Length: 104
Image (tube, rainbow, N blue to C red; front, side, top):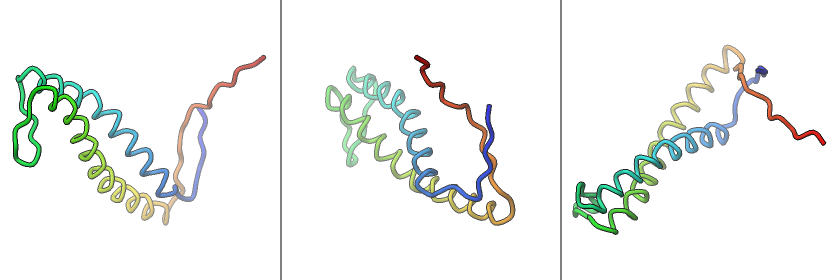
């Protein structure tokens, strides 16, 4: 494991990490909710109207995409602000695993 110390992270990097994390986490949830909606075990609500059947299967990932976008904007902004304040006092140390390259 390698460490790197940086003065501050770019806002784009923070948003990228937050959005990727939220989308990957919400994908299985949206598929489960869409699957349950497809079999009428759950209603997906869109514009205060219950949706079920095949429409629920396609609509659940779209709704959770919007939820991830809104949460990502809020959480990314809060994290950016917090890390910006933190970087005024101390450098940020990031631990990471280096990518292995193929040797030929």
